[in-house]
Length: 109
Length: 114
Image (cartoon, rainbow over all chains, first blue to last red; front, side, top):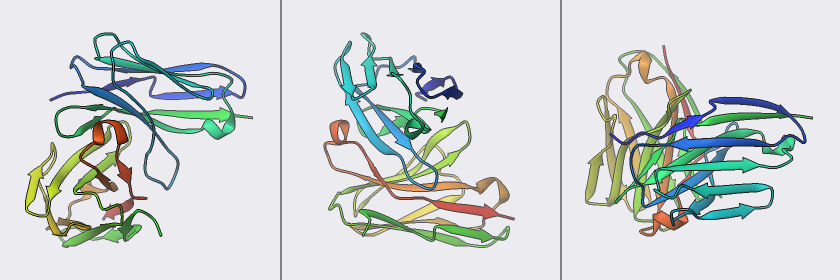
């Protein structure tokens, strides 16, 4: 069974701080996606990274795929209360996604 | 209307009862999925279907069954509900190119088995 472990599980920070969320596996994935989920809603896709070592930026969010395509990180610069939510990574194998355990982020004003 | 609609949004049922969760989509996607979400465990795949005639078990299919009535409809049944099936259930769809375009999720069904 392929597993994706995310760390930290919980993160509570003040507005303006920077943070990094990690997604690690012993398995190689063909691509990796990051989702954000808000209370009462389903996860929404933020980004897909495909190539080992790839870096993508989405405003204040920076996503990186590890060189060996086994791990990924999400860095948020100057976090805002609107960034609050559950962040999920998901690795793609041949026919479906395997989701990580999730990181719950709370950003206080 | 939402691209992926799940009904009901909330449900409380008694142990031993049969319950069906429904999912319909307007995305025109062939692939549909049922996941359950528990705190600290992320999303775990229950069943998935790549077209109307294709049904596959996921990692936690025991105690569940599904029916793909049409391309747009995929329902999940709990034949005899038990308390440890209390969870948030999500339906999702994807195109064949899901590796880049990702999944589209419904808003979820919160199920409580008492």
